[in-house]
Image 1 (cartoon, rainbow, N blue to C red):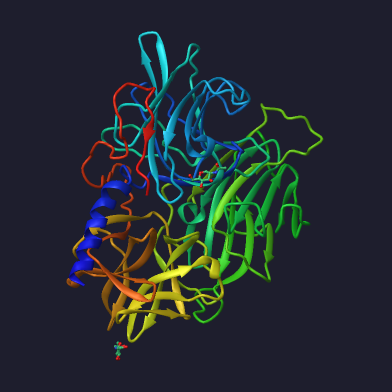
Image 2: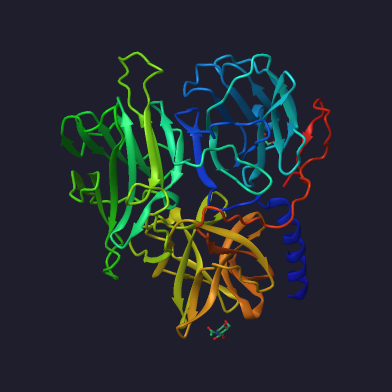
Length: 535
Ligand SMILES: *[C@@H]1O[C@H](CO)[C@@H](O)[C@H](O)[C@H]1NC(C)=O
Ligand SMILES: *[C@@H]1O[C@H](CO)[C@@H](O)[C@H](O)[C@H]1NC(C)=O
């Protein structure tokens, strides 16, 4: 046991150096992309001055694209950076127009992107005398690994992301050394395209209450806007699709399906002013033994609590992601001047700050509750934080989302793994994982389990053999216990789930800044190959 612990400790020390986020605080946003649609544009800070970096992290196997554009029209001159192009072997910086396939500058890269790990990048528009360079850098290194001089510089105002495969992004990093260059109001965006390309985790942007979860939105649009609430980062299968247009609203469960419910009212949505809407996904969790979600989906407008559109789904699905698209009939010509202005992730008073992120345990007898906190990954499966009652204790563990309605909560107990079928799932938002070791419990840690009504376990996760597993920390034992392949494994290094402190100025930087360990070759020789360690 001693030996195992020390090996694991070593692995973990390595992992803390290699896998850590650059820095994190509650301004960091999560975004998923899938498909080649730059449908949603996020405003940059008004003055993207040359010394400001746009930092982001991405987890994708290949082809992660970032657009910097003066307008929200991808056919106009733009900058496009393609990370991990040609099956993760080259990086492109494209100037002017993404419709021109020829990249403006290309550098060879090795393992720049990774399907299982976040890689941390920055972008900068550097002005030197009369020259302007688009620079792409990695991690904490201030030296770009790739740059391109633009003879006719653009003034980007918007940022967008897309990817060939499912990709997860973190953006909006802000710390004492760097300005993110991203507008403070990153819950605002411009939607231009008819395709769903950007997906937001509902747990980060919904308001939670005992009645369920509510999404508050403001929308200004000439064309119909479509709001997708989906269990997956894709438009495959079933989801809830709410269309809001000039003359009312409708609800569907499939892209080409029939309208299940409709509401008619003229001037329901206009291009002249932002209208406020709310969408509620209700649940019946106050009735402890009943199925969690009662499948009721409701659309309302403004401050009125009355339902304009309401439907109870007899076969409820668990929406985990929100996406937007602008609907354009195929017989109409594309007009780049037409767009939708959308604010999302708002609180009940339609401001950003009033979100209720209180962590709550919800009975998961029926389906996975919306806003479930995911923490782990087992191969392609997302693992959600659950807690089960066993042998007089409540013990935190893992719930595999894909096993909805069937699988239980996997916990570690008495040196083995138990699968418990009656359990609760943690919901909440503005949570994050903070590295710690040897029994240390960071401020704001969430209690994950009890023994004799006394808090006993904190919720932790541990990376082991390429998977990320959720377990419990008993501080006095100085060890985190994690269920893995039938065994209860002990770890001295772990990440603890904490509630982010919600103040505008707080910054939590994890650890000291070090030069990026990924970078084999630094220096200004941009002809060199950028090589990342294989994991
Ligand atoms: C892409 O790269 C991966 C990993 O190096 C490799 O397994 C795969 O065969 C490559 N695919 C193509 C089409 O070259
Ligand atoms: C722990 O496991 C051992 C061996 O399987 C068993 O004998 C013992 O009763 C278990 N203890 C508890 C508290 O479940």
